[in-house]
Image 1 (tube, one colour):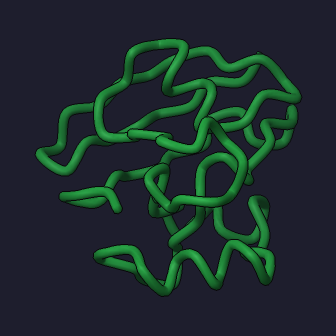
Image 2 (cartoon, one colour; image 1 turned 120 degrees about the vertical axis):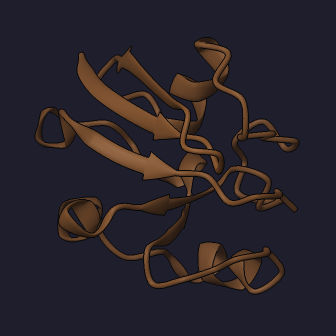
Image 3 (cartoon, one colour; image 1 turned 120 degrees about the horizontal axis):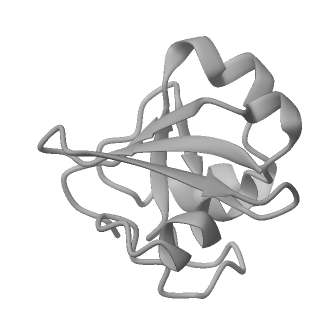
Length: 106
């Protein structure tokens, strides 16, 4: 398990345990964290699970893939830490990960 902190746009924090090998998106959905819609169910085809990886974690999480980058072009509020949470798999190295959600998804 790894602790992941999901921060809503209004600053509300949700700290949850996410099993290693599970996506950040599934961790949010399984724990009823608001702000991640995940319309496609985690298939990297909708960008409704957009998150911002907080700066200290960006190197550990890594860069967005080509398909992910293409989808992020259509998302609101994209920045240098933008990722699709369905594409971030939890590892032991991500224990303590912090992600923030944009104001709107899609």
